[in-house]
Length: 237
Image 1 (cartoon, rainbow, N blue to C red):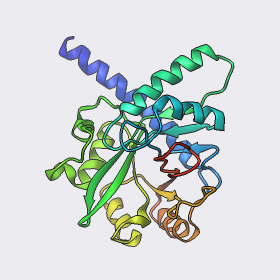
Image 2: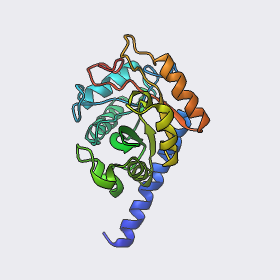
Image 3: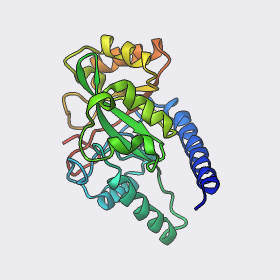
């Protein structure tokens, strides 16, 4: 492929990602405490990182639950997303009349923010974009790449949205972390999260109120997710 054709191909991919990110942003603007886990779920893991669900089984559950949209956010890999995407396309071809959820690309990346290791969720990005490759090696990056600012920038370069995961779960408080993340261009916060792993799943009231209010103050998108590591998308473990 010539340099010119490669440039056109890259531009076309990023244009497609921009459309996907725009659609996701519109969804996130509607998210509330009742959105997860039966309508939307933007935080889940497969056997491709530290979860117990195979991507195919995860998608079967997503369809059975009736999810409208989701993202698989394995740690430092998009392997689970790629497998799930192929499975979903094949399933849709076999069931053309059946509604299917919108699957966005996703990943969870470790990074340093105010001397604290935080997790940053990336959504609706181009998985092949060069900026993200240091973060898709199944382990955390090092050096400058490990800084939250670098992680956020890489996600943006790949056409995606960056979200601070479970902001009330770190050694450093959400009131300190969120403004600092905003300084580096974060797009959103995971406002609806079940910190104590209740059954049935529901967002933790105290933390949700704090994070949601901070999100509103800084004009951030607000996401929800079960952070599933077990065998049910309706629970964290």
